[in-house]
Length: 119
Length: 112
Image (tube, rainbow over all chains, first blue to last red; front, side):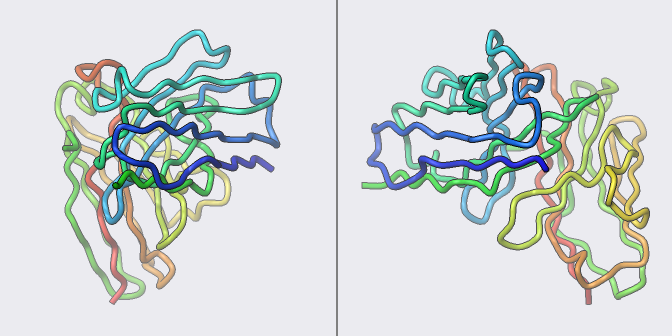
């Protein structure tokens, strides 16, 4: 069974940093592109970032470009999101998601971790 | 601000059929990119409901179906049930947004 478990969320001041982790199990992690998607309280889903299977290719939404960095450790089956220069508008539940086998959808999702940016 | 527009809400009685539209443009749905749909029950993570326009993952009932035409896509739910009450999102790729996946604005389905 595919499992994705996020951690690392919490309360951080504006301008601060936070590193999210997503521990994967139940599938061959190194074979799949992975994503981060966020959802502000009471709002819709927003794609944040994606990384290819070996970590050599990364993509970002314009709203986080230059502030967030996605990475992965295939030996430890773990996905990361380093978030710097955090703003109030980054407050959201952050989900990691595994890419589908044959197309660019999100096959499996973690339970999410809440990031709150506030002074 | 999403580039895919969905109605904020739709409702129907148990057993009825409801449809949710997802309107995009020539840089996303109209360019032929696959459209996917997700169901998000209250307080839970989203779940893949339909992929590549009209395909159901295993375990998703055939009451759910998807279609696409031009710059729009639709999700249909037939035989509406109480546990279908959830938020539904469409998703695709947009080639004008630096490699961005995009989600629809979301639709709340209410079972009357």
